[in-house]
Length: 153
Image (cartoon, rainbow, N blue to C red; front, side, top):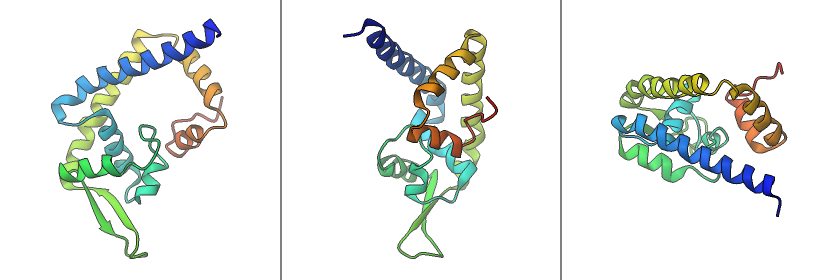
């Protein structure tokens, strides 16, 4: 077993969990989780989307995001309607309540992102290392679809 490889895996996992706990605390007053916040942000920028289309943009959900979507439908934040072009397909969009919540979610995420950038001046180097690690994966494609992958580098 490689100590450096194990260290990387566990440090990465620990950092991700720690970051999600902190983001959870920021989003808690809004009554949503970080994963639900990601769905709201993605739909805010890309709706209407099919369930599959949404899944092709989410990082938080590896398989079908159907349970995540159902939780947001129950909260009245997203709606699911039959596609006018294909009666077999449904399209997801934000409700009025979801649209009103979107800027608050974005504000929480932005505050968290700014805190990360301020506290960790080496964030650019870490970002480049992580990008190198996921290059060629489905995550690279998802990040590119969401304009979260800077091509100029």
